[in-house]
Image (cartoon, rainbow, N blue to C red):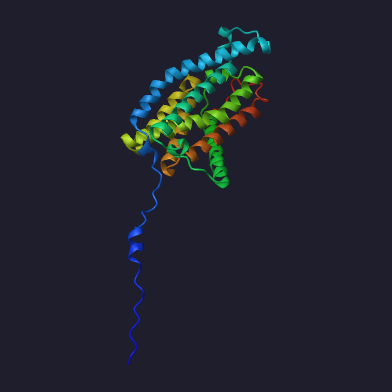
Length: 278
């Protein structure tokens, strides 16, 4: 008799029911999908409180440390000191960052850095971004060498001592680029992109970034225009890559080379007036 054909075993129907099709892996939401105009309004409303709280905190700290450190300047006089102003601005930035962290965590249930478009870079990427920022600084210095400003501006006057100069250098490299990028190319860019579009986000964040720096360069309009172009580069980088990471390291590289150039061209910050690099 011919052998009966052997049918392949049927798959377990129960197993089929118990293991439904797996959904495709979902990507984390983009910043424009997380941050909304109301978040920006909350930030704007919180800013005056942060300014008052930071000033109060720093003044209380100065009053407490003054007798221990032997400082002689009064609380009123010290408020025009460069180092005091840098500490005040750093504390203000800490209040702003804490508020943004709370918004990301409590309001949106998202990790703070990821919600703003941060992705951990490789060492090779960091090096590339930093070198690109340095190259941008070289191009800016060449442009200002061709078309310099004849008038001094307020930022130069803040380099009034060795301590103030080194404090400004540390702030410009380690603090300002990170916080400014988080605010401008982070939350502000995300909200503008969500509401209008990416082109509007690029233009708006670049203009507001330049506006933030106008008081520092008041009267030196070539420098102010250059800052607008630099802000445009940072914003375009954010738009083209879809990430915050490149613009942060571009900014750090840019500021680092600017500070290094100022350091060596002024005999270690001893002769800043009239030789400032933006």
